Length: 198
Image (cartoon, rainbow, N blue to C red; front, top):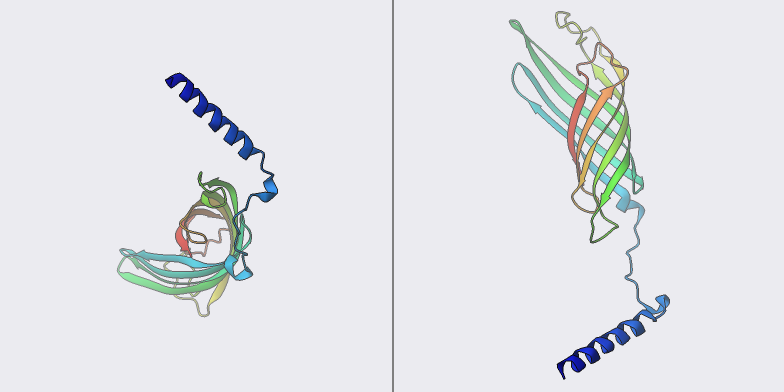
């Protein structure tokens, strides 16, 4: 008796699942995806730097970016840095400012298993042109402050890791190498940046 009831239940479930699979795909309601506006592709963020000691650095670098497509981010940013270094008995200091344009591309993106539309993390390539204004030649700290400020160029390339925290927000870790590597620059190669977008 129990075997017959079990067999009947299995046959009934098999028939129901077979009938359900015969429903045409166009009759099944798909969830409505909200339409994304151009403003939804904008991200804001940047980098903050604080170093205290023999060399003191306080820097603020706000950035804005636009997702051209889900993998490519283009943007621009400004930077200001206060730099102070103890050199024997003297302390040299400088205010450094400038701007940058950048392009970031997600080479590899991992997706959440439950929702294949939201990225979990990405490995990114990064290229950036930077223009900074200085009042001193950092290749020789013995040289006094320059009589006038001057500009130096930087072309930074590298890659990094982007951990997505929400729809547009992310935590970024980027390792960059300055190809031009001007000797007057206050920065060494490689440059390590940690920042946020929201």
